Length: 96
Image (cartoon, rainbow, N blue to C red; front, side):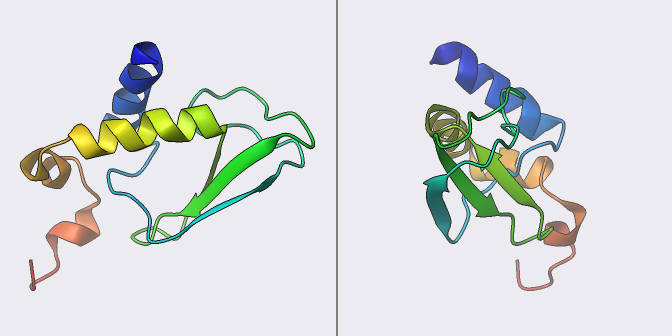
């Protein structure tokens, strides 16, 4: 799990995955998508986790264990770190 969390941190740093937890997460049966974290295929008919990044409206699909690793990585980030590597739009919000 540590390796997956480290991979999640890198994907967040390179903005390949969001740095905030989504408002809603869906779980369902895969149609053979590629995992946004590990980049391996999710077997057809296997469980997958899907969510949308509200800042970019991009959809992400992950294996359940990859989603857990990404969630842990996000929760361990300090608010300051999140802002440093967050999307530009979040820094332009005058209410923050």
